Image 1: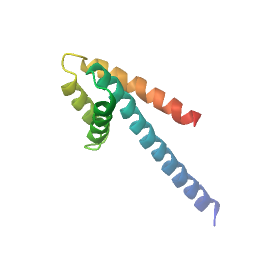
Image 2: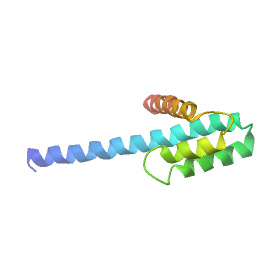
Image 3: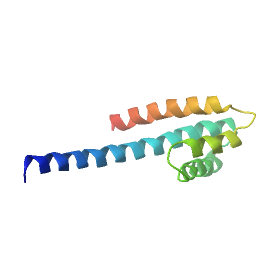
Image 4: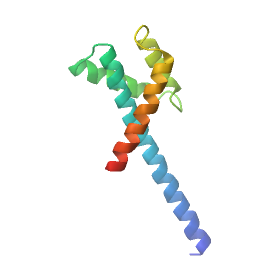
Length: 103
């Protein structure tokens, strides 16, 4: 192998690793935000677990967080604004990345 091939393989491996970490962080972020939103809605136990799955599933509709924002905005009418939701998403992403970094 040439050094170019080695660099290409290293770049591809790093890209795959970074993509996997981003996916895990987004999934964890969605779980954290779902628990926050579920708390605002008074959900506990099995209802909270089901709601968390709904929020996580809503993120599969399109790339990015807009699908989650739409779901939470509709669900949290009268409980939180879109700005509140976006702020919680940002805070949850930071928390998720910190948790992943800690192992």
